[in-house]
Length: 466
Ligand code: GBH
Image (tube, rainbow, N blue to C red):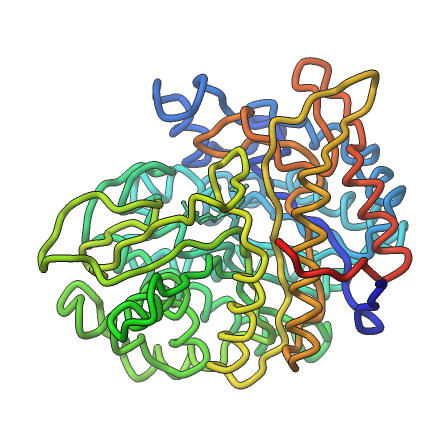
């Protein structure tokens, strides 16, 4: 049975600067923490790096034409901070600004709405090396300055802003587990980084609202990632463990923004490791988003970990799990993607309903959802049935959530094309378009053709079997 999405539903696809642009030192661009992190042998699969990536910097027009061909209504991309501010503060690079001017103009010319993320992890290296990056509160001022440059220059055409992409990943993978740039390992730094990420976000939003929103008439928000945690059993402590796990991933950032404080579970368990906000900061943070940006990929079971103070590595890259005392696991019957992330569409519906309930029905945009598979080109085609199934089932569950009253207003498929998948390098392909990384040729996968039809009809075949 065909089912329609609400009228005006925003159909998009997403990318990020470091993952696709390449041109890492063109036009005075400064290095980012990812440029230097990739240069450390062993950090990235096959020692891959983003120096060339998809060379989107030089293929921008071709890529926008590709978006147009599939009927995208919106395109979410990120601005590389060091491309427009080589050292992260002060001097601005006109060449860098011009690139995004041209991209935005090209999108608008093709009637594709630009959704701009200001920070998708490529921090100017100087800010990390000279000032400790997200561990130094000063970064909030630098980020605000950078954001102001973007609002000033692009805000006449950009009406959708996302300050930060996935602060959880920045804090936990960048400053806790050290698997992402800047590669710091610590069990307290993530909470300090997270604290400063929230303050930086709020300062940028306040700047937009005070200086630009009235004349530019755009909206600004933040995107957080959250995978669903399903209680392993009906036992009270497992239900509490699953709730706590979601609080440590998502509510860490969204409770301060929607409710004005960190979740109680974090305050209790982290003690001194969790910094306090001043009254002024809370004032700034509370209410600092016009919509709820959500990136969602997968689901795990959660249970109360056995034995207090347990230090065993638990399943999943949840990070700093001893703080949570949650044991994660998968159901062996679940299908997994090339990332080994389980395909559990109903987890998406449960998460949407959880958000809707906790924050009193905010407008939600799924700013990323998608999957990696070992795609192959056969006779010029990529028949990625598994990806089509993934999207079909996840979208079906989105619709089910909408029917239950969730105000989901848009969906961005991750990703427009195969790209530099961070620590996994080029091995993991998330694209709707296949990229041959030798020739840089793009080939639409079957999923791109399928998505094109979804967008055109604003409907999907609704079924909920997973
Ligand atoms: C996104 O982050 C990024 O925004 C994007 O740049 C990236 O390319 C894309 O995902 C694909 O990786 O081990 O089963 O517990 C993803 C955030 C957080 C999603 C951790 C998966 C762990 C799954 N991720 N989560 S599991």
